[in-house]
Length: 213
Ligand code: AP5
Image (cartoon, rainbow, N blue to C red; front, side, top):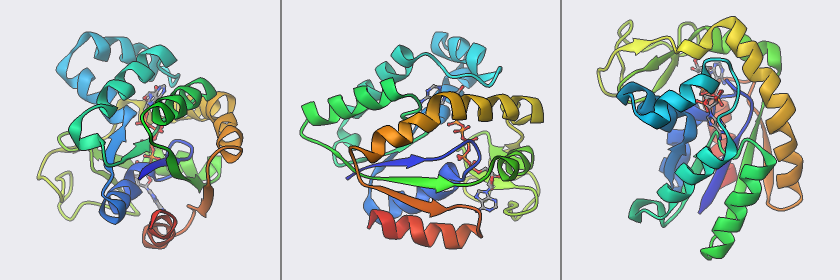
């Protein structure tokens, strides 16, 4: 099944993704993770994406959609994908749904993580991320067992460059201007389940898993 995990920056999409993967066996596809991998490897795409990510803006649609649709054709993506951070514009949503329909697939459900802007700022400024596997933590709500060491892979846990308060505010502005309208577009076309994401991580997880099961 193809699933969209939707919500503003810091809503908990990355935190909840592994539970969705466990529940429905979908491949986790995070466009942010893909760009960060390219950034680390210093590829042309990484350098291009950096210009937009550093300022809290969105990478252009044609670049994002090309990357996503080329990945969708891979063998491990054929039985279903969990889209995390995509689609982020109505144009991306249109192109995704067109691609899925053309390939005999559909969005089974979009799970919308609902959380207020002020909560998001606190979460992102305290977030720490494994630079090896991308696992996310929070200094207060969800710290790794050993400080700065990833529970999952033992890699170094660091703060993301775009998690400064100033850049987070720009990301939230971009969300309201360009990404929030995607939700209305989705509601007219696919099942959408709203989940209150301003609760303990385990409670949110239960509702997210119920929505995709
Ligand atoms: P991306 O990496 O997708 O960032 P984002 O959407 O801004 O999402 P985040 O990763 O910041 O938040 P999240 O919802 O995953 O929250 P998390 O689980 O980590 O994109 C980065 C950039 O790449 C974009 O700004 C853009 O430039 C570019 N980009 C990516 N995709 C694009 C696209 N499709 N089109 C154009 N450009 C694109 O949780 C956050 C923190 O909160 C963690 O510390 C976590 O431990 C904590 N937390 C989570 N849940 C809870 C809870 N219930 N209670 C308390 N704390 C919690």
